[in-house]
Length: 151
Image (cartoon, rainbow, N blue to C red; front, side, top):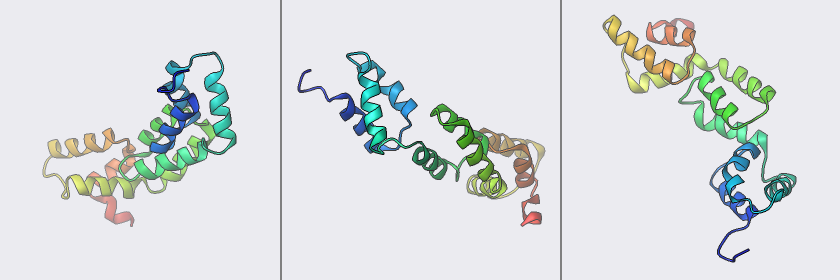
């Protein structure tokens, strides 16, 4: 191994130093750098045993960073793309459902601030929120101004 090339563990630690990564993400990103079979798995096993790779921290990090701006469905997609356990994803999404309308209202208010005057404007606002992954009921309540009735 040349001295100018970081070790597999070094590469993984560099990625983990930037943000939390799941084991699945690290495997995907580092597979191309594997020189001998099993090298990547050994490095990741060691890092996981020492607590550097932690799926729960990855889940909490994504929810903390993304939930204020995205709906539960979009957060679910991001968690699934990280290869996290389906049960943990389901629990995190269920927890987000309780604040879906409030989060949708906050995102809507920051972008638009006032209700649309016509159907075309409401449709635009609804598409915007749907693109952010908010559910249909939350979108309907926020765009139609019914949000305040339920607080």
